[in-house]
Length: 191
Image (cartoon, rainbow, N blue to C red):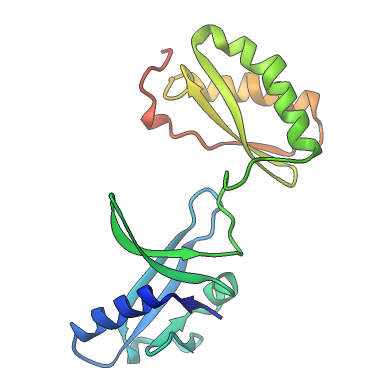
């Protein structure tokens, strides 16, 4: 079941009133990546439903969901939010937890933090860089580079030949390391 908050429901109904025809709302999961989950909500004509689509009650309007999205959206809540950056629909989805939503905890997270603090960060501090642990998902860890490493042309090399090598040799239970740094936002890269 997908729930619309009162604000979201009112906004959908207002958008529907501005249009002609028999409309329903299509909601779809465009990208289920925990790095940046993306959703799409659109008004469509009722006859545009696909054969396999599920039709639900959105609280006064029809809600159409494709089978894959229906599974991923089970228990999700759609809200209408207004912020300084703008306004729009926001999907709170218990099935897709974004990276970095909670502080990494547990035995592997503790060991990774220790290696970062005592082996990795001291070696890149000379270039004004630092690395932090953002999340742990099973045997995959997510790191963020900061300072001189954020936006540095050599960041990929530092990650592959330095950080990954050290972490995976020290902690063989790690299967993969993902860099979640926005390197385009680096303001003072080393190179």
